[in-house]
Amino acid sequence: MRFTLFSNNYLKYTPNLPKMADISVKAGQVKKSSTLALTSLAKGMIKEGRDVVLFGAGEPDFEPPREFDDSFYSALKEGKTKYTPVAGIAELRKAIADYSSEKRGTNLFRENVIVTPGAKYSLFLSMMAVLNRGDEIIIPRPYWVSYAEQAKLADAAPVIADSSEDFEIRADLIESKLTQRTRAILINSPNNPSGQVLKRNEARKIADMAIENDIWIISDEVYEPFVYEGKHSSFLSLGDDIKSRTIVINGFSKSLAITGLRIGYAIAPENVIDAMSGMQGHTVSNVCSALQYAALDVLNKSLLDSFSAGMRRVFNKRRMMMYSSLKKIEGVNVYLPMGAFYMFPDVSSFYSEKINGSFELSELLLNKAGVAVIPGAGFGADNNIRLSYACSDETIEKGMERLAEFFSGQGG
Image (tube, rainbow, N blue to C red; front, side, top):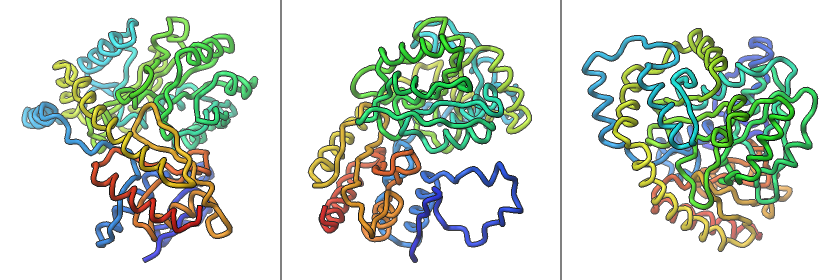
């Protein structure tokens, strides 16, 4: 069976798509997630008996801490399976506020927190809460595939700002995109897909820009636990002036290795949290109640940082393993990422009449080499592909051997 990638950023794997006339204009404007679709496709191939190495969707290959499992099961047995307050149980919201206050050197309160079914939904609610029809939101390139699509769902226009050659986020490049319609700037650090970490001096410049122009900062910090070089800079640590116009997105999915359980949170001024809570109440109601109590127990026992630190040490080793292997492949241009758990190499030297961009290259890698990667085009960087090293050492070694063999046969 052959699977085909298309340039409109989704994989064709559904035989009978509805006609455009059957769905709303807004729904028709939204592209499918290339990361989730490709990973799902590759897993389907594995179930069919195909030998595929997965470097696709980013999710830690660890089991969650035993204490989390025990707390989750206990909450279920205790009957904590009913509705909770929409924004989350009060104890968990306070624990998140206290935890975040200590890490960022600021004062946050329960009213500044909403618990959501995954950080992705926090992002969606934040855009719905502060963006109006016709507003613009500046998003540095490369960007996570869902940012622009969520902005469209909020009836806003995503405006893409370039970054430096090695994908560092720079305030001057963001400033060049400011207009009278700019309503927000979205920053993701550590960055998915590049792994770059925002420098503190650049964060200060962006904060000053937001204050001067009276615009919002939406800061996606979900990869905060995974910084290997440099230091994570949260906008919440830069003073009350920027805190009053900042929405921070974070969660437990990555830091506890529970990506499928979906629990995230947002930190924002109280009026924004109230608005997000109102929308959540009319859509998903609340996060799984037992899951909230398990997350609370993890915070109360101070397990979050220690568990993610253990993963970080392992990921750092894998980071160096994958980086050194990619560096040896002639024609692949890769730099060492500072955070997250992705490599984002430039593979454009292999493009030709037969390989027209990252989608077609990813298709060949999947079908010919048995390696699943994510096309960079979905991240706004068609010269690149994304590889996750949140997988075993053996998987990395096997995948790197296949990539080296594949690219050597392409003639560089």
